[in-house]
Image (cartoon, rainbow, N blue to C red):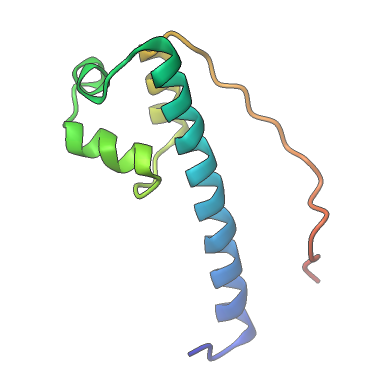
Length: 92
């Protein structure tokens, strides 16, 4: 139950953050398939568990720009980020 306007805003922010995380995860998955890199290969390259990689690739785990950069490097790619004007609801 929402108790304030702030709670509602936080839910919207999380929703947008989740959408972004899932978009990035989807693009990572597509890049890995194209480059024929397995989750196990990526886990070894990043010195982390396959479980952690799976959570990132499912969009279930929040990750830093540093981690994203390391993943891109491990699969032989670079990261490009662009910002676009939000055409949705405006905050006041």
